[in-house]
Image (cartoon, rainbow, N blue to C red):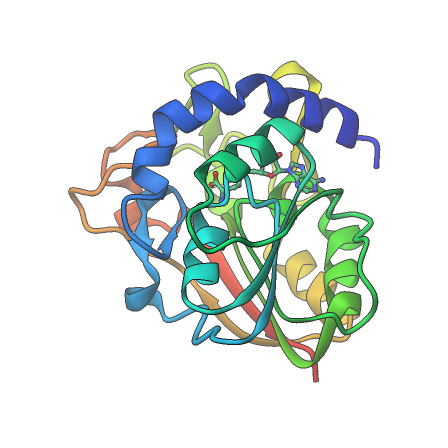
Length: 246
Ligand SMILES: C[S@@+](CC[C@H](N)C(=O)[O-])C[C@H]1O[C@@H](n2cnc3c(N)ncnc32)[C@H](O)[C@@H]1O
């Protein structure tokens, strides 16, 4: 829980500017995944959510939650930052859905409350996966699915902190990947692929797929500069895990 305070402060601070910069792209169309806004229709990760109980871990301004509520899902959006939740409240359309302030590390829900738990660079990026995955598994019903998109270990290892961009040089150790320092004392988390597998299997989940979203060559990330510009077309910048509770 050590990163909570700084992460909450960071998101409260940057929420306004972040939404000004990114909301037009995140919310440009329904169901867009990640830093390259790749449609779920292409990736087939989330499936039909009609009438399903869905939890978004780290919902931000609710671009995803809003879409799924509109499709008939019973969505709950959870986020640590009250400013991000205020943005989600403001952006909520005719279809209302509940928002909860809380931490992905300690979910305030009863066991088996949800059919689907998911996030897109949310609670499984901004909180320790070895704590969050068991929490997600606890609140999922049997046959429920955990679907999440996050930065890939390739991207993290090749990130040039000084130049603030991703390059083709390995700059960070792969073994030992864990906490990644962000601005103002905030923290994100990354694991090796082996540790991701062990975190999911250790929580009793069965891994169904690992999708590696691949943008078209002309599609540039709206978040991070890459060198070469088509970096993510050549190496996976993100990883989209799909796991099921048996
Ligand atoms: C990059 S946003 C993800 C939301 C949306 N998909 C997007 O791309 O904007 C990350 C969100 O995670 C939230 N967050 C950070 N740490 C969290 C935690 N421990 N538990 C729940 N949410 C957290 C932040 O407040 C922020 O709204």
